[in-house]
Length: 257
Ligand code: RET
Image (cartoon, rainbow, N blue to C red; front, side, top):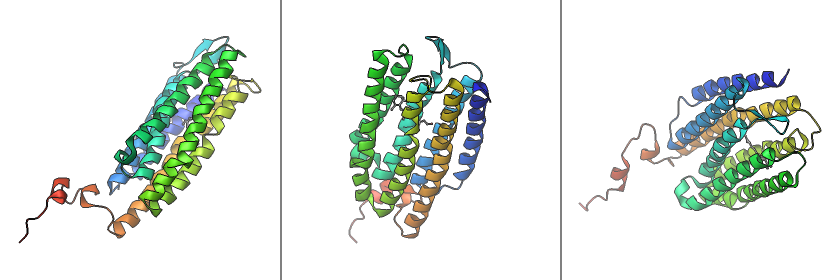
């Protein structure tokens, strides 16, 4: 398989993944299920677009004598904040509870992708490349610290079921995400221990796991959580689909009889 074959594999995998996730969410019953379903559909659609563009020869250019796949960075700048938003929604239940904390994590993530793109664009072996790489890795570490520190504590405040789902999905995500800086470091963008075909193959497989497999796993977890929350009467009527009662009705205070 050559580079283009791996890009086509990615495009086909994301197209199939989109259909799979679409079907998986067709019987959503709660606000929570709906939120995660929409997020994961947007994530997979964005990745599909990037892979299709790269497979068709767009979204990539020759820079410094090698092929640079810049469409990846646009894809990641959109999809990685959405993936973290999914974790944030699980941890916080409502994002308004700690909105700036959440925005800070999403900003740090976009900063990581932007500085990573500058590392890729810098000349081969230059100090600038390694400076950008170090800055991007610093942001990566800060995201992990937030996920496993403050956000994890917030998930525990939200409730035991939220905390359990948050723990599982965060473990999945933070394991898979480790592949990216390593692939960059050892591949053609960095030390050149392996070539573009190998690096493209690793990214394609990892992207499919980080978005499609992760999406299926996160949606299944959210569905199981909603099933138990519904059974225990923990989902207010206005958070159900279709809503049993409007929010303003729930807020209305009945006058004393
Ligand atoms: C770069 C290079 C510089 C150092 C670091 C990086 C991290 C990238 C990550 C990407 C995650 C992408 C995902 C895509 C989904 O399909 C930019 C490679 C730290 C973590 C999850």
